[in-house]
Image 1 (cartoon, rainbow, N blue to C red):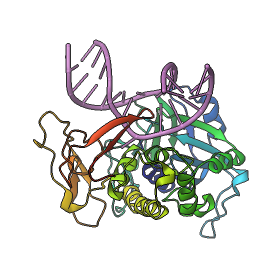
Image 2: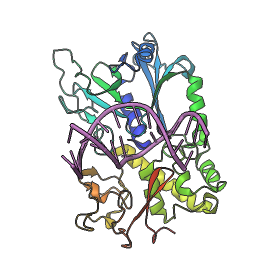
Image 3: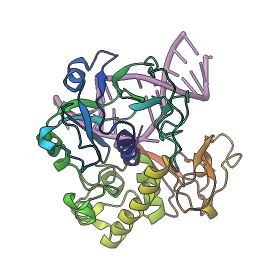
Length: 345
DNA sequence: TTGGAATGGACAA
DNA sequence: TGTCCCTTCCAAT
């Protein structure tokens, strides 16, 4: 259940856990047996995200990087690529022997990558002492489509929309279709903000719908869509071509900030500190989100409770944090759209 | 125990 | 626009 920030985070995690390692690849569920066989025993040498797409590049096990020297990563065309799209409810689950900075405690419960929790954020932890015994990965839990096992960690994939082994050409074909990604290191190859602005302004479709179109901008999902439009004071139902270019540039810039923070911490928090008030009791009968997410927008310390993290997402019927008007919700192209009719016009 | 809902998208008509 | 797919979790029975 990720938006683009989660996938970028995953790409980084795969690099930290497995880069350079020869991996055992299998399909405990059995639905990816042939694909897993193509990758089993090869070396993970690339890990990239574009929008919500994750690409893992595998080389032959013999293609080992020079020890101590410059890493000799084979060109993309020489790799086999695992393309994964988590879709609505796909998830990666990690476990490890505790030696990794990412899987940070021996015997730590496996973390689901999604809304409630994710890979721990913050500085890398020192390596835990290695036991004498070889580490054994836990048994797969649930319907695990792919399992990657490295020296010290395991990654299990469940419920993906897409999971396939593809060539470099096929990777490029997918990327060519995607719009620019606000938090990719180099959004420019896809046209960057200029392409985003142009794509929106040539369309009569509502800006709320366009933000969810991965060909227009890659990586934005339902939460960032709702929240960035609120922060821009923009009515989601405005036709794309009626939105000033300057406003759209502001939306892009805001997404860069919000999604970078999301990728860094693993949680989406879009509220400014002065706008944070708990929803408890604010509107009897309205949904109340519980739990805690990490604070991530403005550098202030501490964490933000889940019911203070968003302006409008999942807050229909509750008073707008800024003006008090009840937040509205409607289905738009089969997805729920949330907005404040007063602040966004 | 069951049945929606969930931060998604491909495809057909 | 509608239909289907993939899987898990939690609130409602």
